[in-house]
Length: 143
Image (cartoon, rainbow, N blue to C red; front, side, top):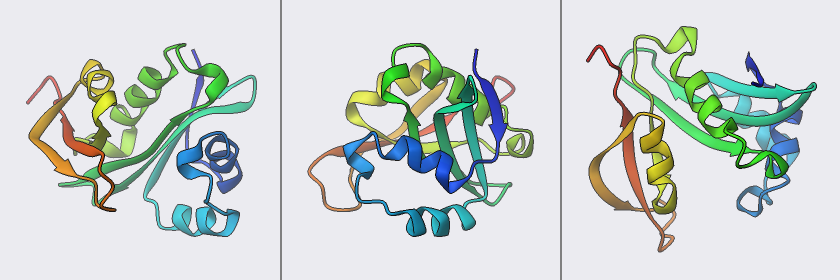
């Protein structure tokens, strides 16, 4: 099991983003700026190295949108994605709000295994990309 940190540096995130073509164009200053405007981050470490991360934008009451979920390439398939999503769900400052996210079609089953449900069918990607996304909301057991 990885160590959970609530908080991440731009360097932590960039070490993960650089491994994935989706975020290859993110430069260090832009990531620092995004992080300054991010309400919460969750970082998993193994042997001191960042292995998974997610950012959350929230008002702590109604909305907690999860962004940039990533697991280091050499650690995929080890269950770290589920650990990461559990850490987001269990974040002490997010207990009054259900996290939601936009999921790439192929990842919907993964997020469903993590407790998220598809809310309103598929929507077009905001950037006009032909890939469809699904809005998902975590359902807490007490709801």
